[in-house]
Image (cartoon, rainbow, N blue to C red; front, side, top):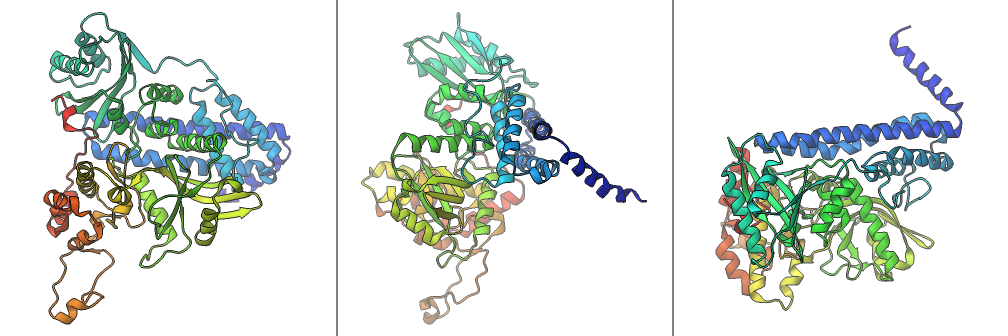
Amino acid sequence: MTKKAWFPIIFVCQVRLNQHLSNSRIAVVAARKIFRAYESFNTRFTVITERARARFEARDVDGMRLDSRQRLDLYKGVVDRVEVKVRELLGDRIENEKVWASIKAVFSAYSSEREDWDIAETFFNSVTRRIFSTRGVNEDIEFVATDFATPPNRSSGLVYRHFNVEGELEVVLQRILNSYHFSKTLRNGENISVSIADRIHARLNGSERVAAIDMVKSVFYRDGRAYLIGRAFTESETVPIAIVLQAQSESTSVEAVLLYENELSILFSFTRSYFHVLANCPNQLVRFLESILPAKRVAELYISIGFNKHGKTEMYREVLGQLGRTSELFYLAPGDRGMVMRVFTMPDYDLVFKIIKDRFDPPKTTTPKIVREKYQLVFRHERVGRLVDAQEFENLKFDRHRFDETLLTELQNVASRNISVEGDHVYIHHVYIQRRVQPLNILARSDIDVDRLSRIVLDFGHAIKELARSNIFPGDLFLKNFGVTRHDRVVFYDYDELDEVMELNFRKMPRASTYDEEMQAEPWFAVAEEDVFPEEFLQFLGLPDAVRTAFLDEHADLFSVEFWHEIQTKLSSGTRFDNPPFPAQNMVL
């Protein structure tokens, strides 16, 4: 008998052996398999994250981006594999909820020994929801809320170092910089500590002294930069700190210092790619970040440090909490109705829910599958502070009475594949949840100060250019597809027409040879799907007359083929375009 012939025999024997295991025994074995799978995921996640330091010091930005994509793809592969193993193990008990309740209890005991128990619980949920295709939540077989009101174990140590300031501030700052032990010497030496101290004194207006400083032990890495994150204490306030580092050929240098909550909020924005930062105890790190960024939701902080799956868990818990605290109804979000999505929210809530329609209105020719691929592209792409992060959810369950009837009727009419109503409940089979921003077209039509609108519209042009330099073309340049954050930054959030710049053919509009050709409603020349005519952009923008001239003065190049060809040439040659997440005035070099 050949070797291959043994495999089906071994498999059958294993299944028969499993059938003789008691429910309690098989629950222990299954829990151990899931827990070991989580440990495997965590180990590989940590290995990738640890490479960030070497990537930074080698100035290997391309390698860092590859690591980012690999880390994002890691989770699904591990869940896929353990699902197969658990199905083989449980056999006809795979959907036995009593067995799974026992599996959950055993897994909880295992995870309570870890400092990242919260991330482990989310991993367990991913497995159970895959197997049961759970609609809504089932607290018997998944961690709807964490099993622990407080951390279940004693932490191995604080995530930060504490520095008392008893003498000159610059002396303590030098100790702080030295404590990170970069392999390359710090350029400018003690002078840079004096510069940072001067910035802090200016921030405090000389009215108070710094009594102490806490600095996160781990370094935050992203897009070729390193960030030292901390907080300074005075008698009256806590001052957030971010020291931005760049690697030079022979040294490391301090590039910028951020000392205001708004500045760090932009750094940790939902429009940025995720940091690579070592976090043995993610919960403790998030609590530290929460102390300097109190306006940030816990979900966004988990997501920003790379634990996007657990961020989704926290986001869903928050949505349930919001529904429990208020009697508000879901209703259609303000703004022009899209041809691809239906968007709804709650009053005074800063999240929106986006459901793909069953069919798209002309002239849209895309498909739901392609739309989902566009969102996946954004998820894995460098977002340069201009692409709103979207978290993908499946099989959510809500009470029917929480939906405005107009909204519910609309969703049933246009998105019946992704929503169903059964009795007193509404089931949403697939939805994206994003941060809510004010649509740019609505803002432009409002009674807004012209100077402020001018600044926002000019930033709109910069947003298009920064996206282009990251190889992203928004497709539709309508104002309604862009939004404005509370920091008056323009961001892009409608991805159904998004394309990569390098995949497009930017052309000049052929001139008509006759009057009849010019007056035709349809083009008199061949147009391929990838053809783009920049000359046409201006007529689609719909800019108010009050700011149109200012926009053209600064961004007229957007309407020229030459601008886009130059971008393509530089991208193809490997040119890196830098998009610092802070303004020039924060720089200390």
